[in-house]
Every structure is written in C-alpha cells, then in structure tokens.
Length: 333
Ligand SMILES: Nc1ncnc2c1ncn2[C@@H]1O[C@H](COP(=O)(O)OP(=O)(O)OP(=O)(O)O)[C@@H](O)[C@H]1O
Image (tube, rainbow, N blue to C red; front, top):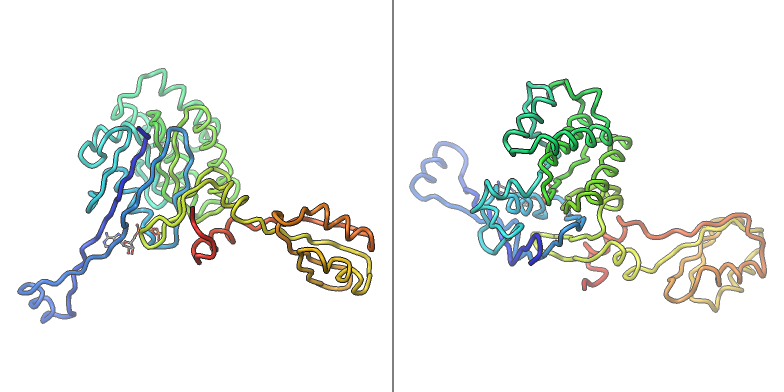
C-alpha cells in the first residue's frame, strides 16, 4: 500500500445564484437556486514514502482543494483518499499525527505569544517526547537560522521569519508527510534557499514525504523529483522532472560568438538537422534536437570554417516545458 492513495477524487463547491437587491433575496428564499462548481474531477495518484512531489497547475486549477481534502479539512464529493492507511476526513485527529501542513498565506502559530511558546504548546498537543523535541528544535533552529527571532511573537516577525517558524512548527512531531501550499510566496531569494535546503535535509534524514504546490519553478526544481500537473481539476501530467526535461523535450540551442564568415557557416550546416539563426555577423544561434544530432558534431562542423570565441548550450527551462504541457503540445504518458 502506498503512503498516499488518491482514487477518482472529485470535489464540487455549491454556489448560490442570487439576483441583486431585496427582491433577489426574497426570490432566493422562495426558490433557491444553486450551481455546482467542479474544482477537482476524478483525480488519481499515489505517493510513496520519501517522494518529493510538486502538485502544480494554473490559478484555480484545484491544487488547494486537493490539499485540503488530503489534510481532512474538506470532505470530497466523491472518490477515495487513504493517507498512511487512514481516511483523512473520517480520522481527522489521528491523521494530524501523520501530517505537517504549511499554508503560505496563513499561519498556524499563535499570533501574540513568542514562537518558542507556540512550539512548546505544539509539543504538548502532539505529545512529542522531550528528547525528540529538543533535538528537532536544535536542528531546525540551526538550518533555518531562527535564533534571532524565536523569542519574538509571530505578529512581530517578517514574512520570511514567520514562514521559517511555520515550517519548523509543522515538523516538530516528525510527521511522515508534509503538505506545503505556496510555502515561499513573497520570500526573498536567501530565505527561499534556506527553505529549499531545509526541506531537502528533512526529506533525506527523516524520509519525510513532501507534496508541494507552488507557482515558483525554482521551488519545484530545487525540491521535487516528480511533477503532477492539474488543469481544470484533472491530472494532465504525472511523471519525473527528469522525464519532462530530458526525454520528452530534447530541444537545445547553441549560442556562439564566431568570426565573420559571411554565409559560409549556413552553407556548411545546411545538410545537418539544425536551424541556424544569425543574430548578427558574429553571433549565431543553432537550434537542434539532441535526439538527432550531438552538440559536439555541430561544433566540430562549425570549427572547420570558423573560429569560435565563446559558446553556451541552452536547455529549455521548466517553465517552457510546463507551458507546452498546458497547451497540449506534447502528449502525456
Ligand atoms: N470555498 C469555495 N467555494 C466555491 N468555489 C471555490 C471555493 N474554493 C475554491 N473554489 C473554486 O474551485 C476552483 C479551484 O480552486 P483552488 O483554490 O483549489 O485552486 P488552486 O489551484 O489552488 O488555485 P491558486 O493557484 O489560485 O491558489 C476555483 O475555480 C475556485 O474559484
């Protein structure tokens, strides 16, 4: 049995349709009208212990709704969820022991009391044994750099400090699963890096399974090794980042600074499976598929007729690849 099992999961929200004004309110009392908004539709996936999965999609795709059902906050309209063998909604209390949850937009810390006191309360709530609490606190403080603000109340912290405290709070009880919904929203690059480092440390040392939603592709690339993409409530891609970057897309671009050779270069390369884009007399870009030709072959051919002062090879960024998935430009396994 997988740690997380989601089968044909759907969620619809019931929205009231009301005409404006008092008349509309009366009409609604007598003949109430509703429309159902399908937020998640027949989503299925499994996650094994220790996996780091990005659950991504455009605004309104259904990511937060899925996370809320996985945490047990929301009851699915249909379908099944098993988290560490439990139905999260039916076994909400038991389920909280298995999960840590971080919502980037909200805090689970007590607003007016020092962070360290919030941590002590969590120690009691989760019945965390003393030595385990002490060890976690030490390591988390160290990696997340929390010493300067651990005695401050949450309301006095910057966003980056609060987020680090929130992430630490969610992991004090060593849950096997961590759900993160937009954990780095609004954070600066240095804090983001601390968060990436910490999450990778936790995953490596404690085998914590991570399910992350984020619009920040750096989060995804630095933390996750698998991507599930949802669009309008439905899974449209589920595979490793390696696969999305490597196998499905093999396009590459050589950018080279060359000697002025007129159009001899174009002539030389015309029988190779490449597209030559002349940026100016000394600058050229060569587009190719690494499945059809190796970069070194192209460079060897170029060197036969021109000196190369400098060159770089560009891979398509994750953003471009994800756009292609959204556009349906490549098919999903
Ligand atoms: N409480 C609610 N009542 C009615 N509709 C809702 C509710 N919560 C979400 N929705 C709708 O369900 C759909 C999915 O919302 P959800 O918040 O899961 O998307 P998301 O992928 O997390 O988006 P974002 O990236 O913007 O956070 C959206 O169309 C949203 O308007």
